[in-house]
Image (cartoon, rainbow, N blue to C red; front, side, top):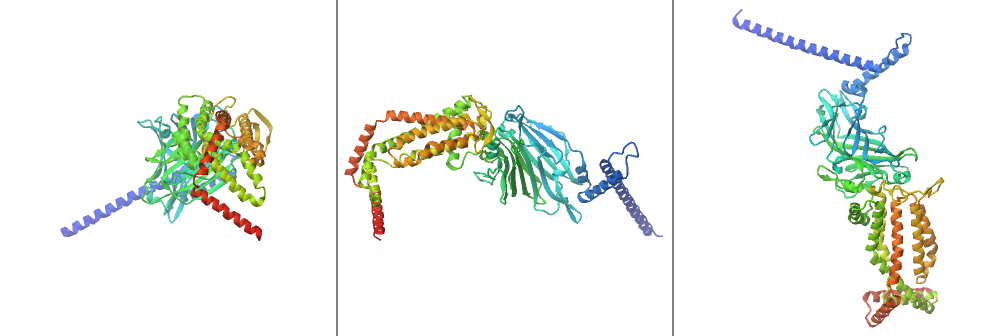
Length: 640
């Protein structure tokens, strides 16, 4: 053979030798993987098999049948979701707690989720145990998605699998980092990172950052446009009155950029709602505390629901939310957050995620429109200012009532003067009634009466308008005090908790619409309402005969209705209305002593003289023309 042939043979031999070597190594690696997989299946099978009794006669064919069935179920799960997830599904879960200055958070590796939150600074009513936001046994949080499995896809719910938790790390700024991972494939895993801060600023420390990372998961993910989120729990009863707490407990959410929030309402039974528009956050809101899942501009859809628990069970409501976030193969993960804390205005208004204010303060029901404006810009600043210098919240409520009465005192004065004018002009009105006694002359009588009012400078609505103007303030306070967590647990006089009802006597039975207790603040408030209504009626009945028909409603029915309504309400609110009524009565008595009827009469006479010389206004001319047209129409109808 020549030299070229020898070289060719040698090269071919080396190629075949290399190929054989690589093939042999691949075969060995494959056998090792098979052996490891078999060992893994054997270990899982052993964990599923019941322990065999020492006496061989005890373990019979039933145990072997159960063992075989469990092994078959295991093989089916391995075939469905893969070895790694099958292992995570059957692993032993662990629980551990991480805390900062304001709360303690319970984690579970089952689902890698938060199972419970305890607030250190707040106690449950009549108990030294701290407030727990929800029952750990009912808490569920999970991501749902699909993994590729050959020609099929596997439906994954993370609450069914045990994550691998890394040791908790404390960062340089005091933040606790909790990392848990769920392997979903070779070199691919789902990672949860929780950050619990300890900055000693409530708006930051009640906020838990929740970062989800999808490491190398794109190759194993099935085709899908979204990832589901399932969140549910059952809230404890943390306040004294179940009825009142249940009324404020609901599910709330916010649309991106909105200054207001939406709620499912205050149904006493159950309610559900489907939201097909994007939302920024979803809250499981209780009377004074909330659990909020925050995902700014990420939640594309939400199905929300709640159901009311039985009174006396120790729970208030079952919450459930099914949400979805967009997903593509390029999605690296998501930056979520939780807020677990009090519904305190000064804290919620400062909560931000990613530099964006979330309007969480809207969880506090301060009222809509002008009522909310009055609370946010008037009542709350004054309340917070007084809190800095006065330790008793009962005294603060008293001062708040005094300040509000002083603000609306000019309207009270005008209302009294208007009623005094109506009283003084009553004899002249009676003369007009005698002059036009027939029903056919009603239009003339009305026209003459309005002319008389005009000359005397009387506005028939003068006594009502001031009352209408001050109504927004009264309603704003009505919304603010029961929702103010600052009153929670604060005692005053015989009330142990100004945020709940006071009881001087517990009835052995329950009265429909009233309850099973007697609230003294509510009772005194209703008696003061009766006293003010009686005094006001005495002043107006003589000048306004139509008031006689409203006597029963004003004097008796209204105070009685308030007694039934407010018996379960916050004692702080009843105390405020009690003080406000007493101040109004006192204010009216002072104004009556200050105002001289003779001076009012002189002013009315001067106005009448001035009006008689003056030219009629265009409004008065149009009004008189309208009355003449109506009278002509009535006469035409009578002729027919």
